[in-house]
Image: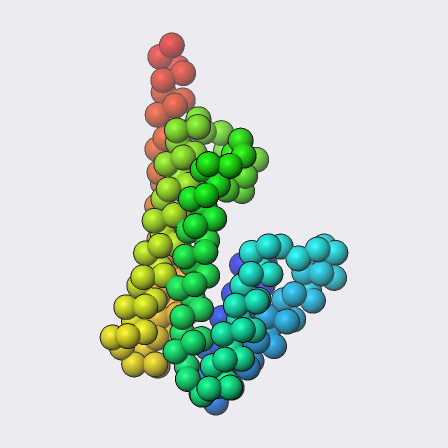
Amino acid sequence: MQLLIDLFPIIVFFVAYKVAGMYWATGATMAATAVLLALQWARERKISNMLLITAALVVVLGAITIAFRNPLFFQWKPTVVNWLFAAAFLVSEFFGKKNLTERMLGHAIELDAALWRQLNYIWVANFTFLGAANLYVVYNFSEEFWVNFKLFGMLGLTLLTAIGQALWIAAKTADREQEQKET
């Protein structure tokens, strides 16, 4: 359910783009993001930092895109968001007892510190790559291709990373269990 909620603005953008073009899609995404903020506030009486940062970028870059009639500003949003996430995951290695990956998944799985660090770096690499891939598509393909990539390509690449992560965790957990049996 949370995945659908998180994907709501992207799906709204995609549908609005197909129906009415970039500028209407940008405005619709801004409205969808406002709805997400309101929903999260209504449900939890707080707004996550991730959503707050994303919403700020949607509003600022969306407004600039509409005001200057230049889609490039909004096309940069996925890169900025992904690179901010990469930076947050990287910085989390140096502050606090747990990195972001361990804070998010530590309740569900048990790994030693070195494995949490490796897993965290996988997400740093993923977000860095997604930001770069977005720019590559923006500057080398049509706007319509970018819109399709934004929904299907970026989501697909993130899903592949999550599946790879799950397989990696399963392998490391199996190795750990085997080592415990041998001792």
